[in-house]
Amino acid sequence: MHIIQEEIGLPVFSSAKGTKGDDTHVVFTIAPLPPGFGMTLGNALRRVLLSSLPGAAVTSVRIDGVQHEYTTIKGVKESVVDIMLTLKQLKLRKHSKDAETITLDVKGPKQVKASDLKVSSDIDILNPDLPLFTVEKGGSVSMHVTVEKGVGYESAAERNKQHHEPGLMYVDAVFSPVERVRYEVEAARVGQRTDLDKLVMEVKTNGSLNAEEAMQFASQLLQSYFKYFGSDQKTVEPEFMADFSRAAPVAVEEPGTAAPAKESYTPIEILNLSPRTLNSLINAGVGSIEQLTKCTESMLSNFRGFGAKALDEVKETLATRGLTLGEEGEE
Image (tube, rainbow, N blue to C red; front, side, top):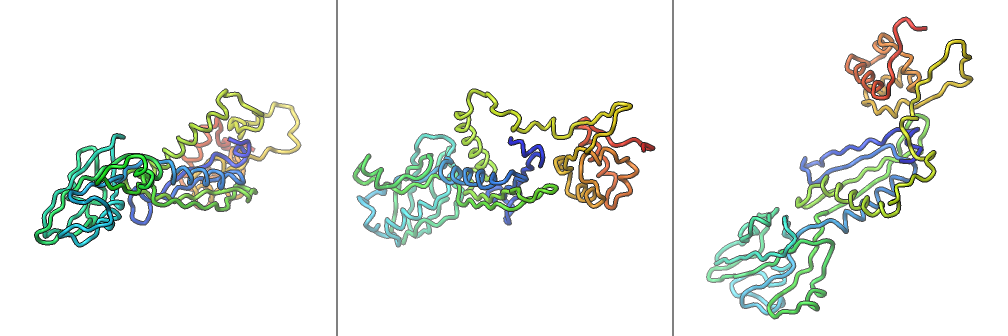
């Protein structure tokens, strides 16, 4: 991380499920970030999420008695084009990479749904209530649908050029499981710095991957490429890379030595305390780690809104940095 993080503290990453409360719609937040890093991270993650995640989709259809998509089926209300467009709306989860054919054999009268498709244990239909077409009395349909797992988008025209087979109708395949990605960069503040970034990303998927899995895949993919630019593991300009052991040094004053001309000031925000505890300390005028280590337990207990849980939190957090509160009776 950049040396700026020593001043503002480690970024805090959090996630919250959307209005429906499911894991396919999640809002991710990370802050504080150095100026400009919100846009840098948000744009890179968004591009990968939309273009590079693997998913399953229908790639071709074969219907008995049908030679091309610009026709109709006797006893079926919808045209073949309408049926193919509806099949593109199937939300599928496929566990293996190999292509697989699923079948459908129905007789009317019947409202055919996605749940009527016969699939193996390798494929899960995530929207089984999706209406596919309507078969009237006396009508029947026998259909073979090919499902593949891939990345990005493949057009039906390109597939038809490469593998033209009579009676096999190709479908435009959208493999991406991500339905929507939106990000915003908001202002964040730590101490006196008001130029920091807060990245808020909203991710919605079709269910074949949940939003957290999609975000993990995107970040891991980016890391795998970034490693090529720093593969020798040599740190360039180490003084400007964050080292959090330097963030809150313990000042040891030797007997008889003069006090320093200026006391160091390390913002208390880098301790990543809970909002309630942090607000109580700041409202009481404790804005740095150095000031906090001079406070005693009795002093903190007198702060407004500062209870026993907050006291335990502060003591535990300071202990992770090798620091303690002041002793009772110290001047």
